[in-house]
Structures are given as C-alpha cells and as structure tokens.
Amino acid sequence: MFYSLSVVLLGIPFLIVGPFIGFRGRTRLFAFWTRVVQWILRLVCGIRVRVEGAANIPDYPVVVIANHQSSWETFAFYNLFYPICTVLKRELTWIPVFGWLLRWSRPIIIDRRRKTTSLKEILRQGQDRLKAGLSVMIFPEGTRVAPGEQKAYLPGGAMLAVKAQVPVLPIAHNAGEHWPAHRLAKIPGEIVVSIGAPLPTQGRNAKGLNGELENWINGEKKRLTKEPES
Image (cartoon, rainbow, N blue to C red; front, top):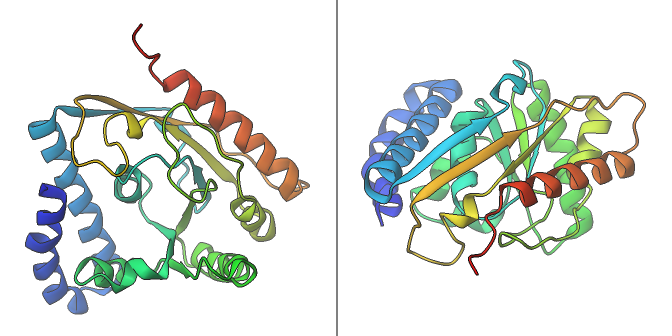
C-alpha cells in the first residue's frame, strides 16, 4: 500500500525537479526513494535487511546477476549498488509517474516478445551503460521464482559481461519470503542479501560463466531459504 502511495507522493515532486538536476541528480533521488520505502518496511511491516559480503561491492561498473523473487529487489538494489540500471520490459515504462521515473534511470528497455532482438538490445545498450559508469542489473531467471524453486538461467547477463569484458557480481537473497510475489501482505523478518566475490570474465565463455553463476546463486538461495515448519 505505502509502496504505491510513495510513488505518487514522491514521484510528482521528483518529476517537477528532475529536468533541472541532471541524470546523476535524478539517480540520487531514485536511490533516496528506495531508502524511504525500506525504512517504512522496517517500521510498519517489521522487515529488516542484512547484507553479507558488502565488501565485495566494487567501485567500478559490473554486471550484477541476481535471483528474482519479489518486487523488493527491483528497487532496493538501486540504492545498494548505486549507480546502476536494470533490464526491464517496455510495458513498465507506460505506467503513469512510475514509468516516467523509470525512464530517467536509463534502463535497458526490451520487448520480451522478440527474444532475438531483446538479446541484441541487452548487449548493445548494456555496453553503453557500462561505458557510462553504470553497473547493469540482470535477473537471469527472467521472471519471479518463488523461494525453494529453481528456473534455468538465461545467458544474456553472462554474455554481456564477457562481451564488455567486465566482472560479474553474483547476488542471492530471500526477499520472496517477506515480500511474496502477487500478494499484498508482507511477512515480518529479515531479508538477507548475499554478495559474492566479483567473477572476472577474461578468457571465459558465456556458457561456462552462466553455469557458475547459476550454481553459486542457487546454492546461496538454498542456504538462505527457511525450512518449512513441520
């Protein structure tokens, strides 16, 4: 509820000042908004956040590869890995206020129905964003996957990292346990984000790198997922 309300309450002032503060200023506002939402989550819903491996976050652009369980990581990572952009479907940019703000973050916009074209856009726009000093966030599962479940990883993130010759930063988390997909209710507890060491791409091929990422993230997901009570 507050998540949607915050988009309106903060989004409209952001749209007014946005044209006058430049791209970096707009990204800082976006990161500030994510901090406000997480503060409210802790205060109202009792959801805390703990980050493991924060020292692994580099001070240069990388391709961030993470599992996708909820809406939480789609906005929280803008602050945690600032400055960063993400790959998103073009329909999201059509949403009034929210979609307009998303466009200001310089996302890589794709048409999911055109898989071949989408991959080309990820590689083309992704290299452009990396050269501009932005990390690129990609969810290789392609959709939200519930805690305890797995889905084969798409290779676009690994291919971008190899083509651009930048490291990959592997991320795993359990956000879906506290912000479940397709549900309004939030579950109190602790979201844990596990950040692995950056993986170099020199001399690597995308297939092997993608497999290594999938194995590491799935292993961390299993570790972070709570066992169901008997």
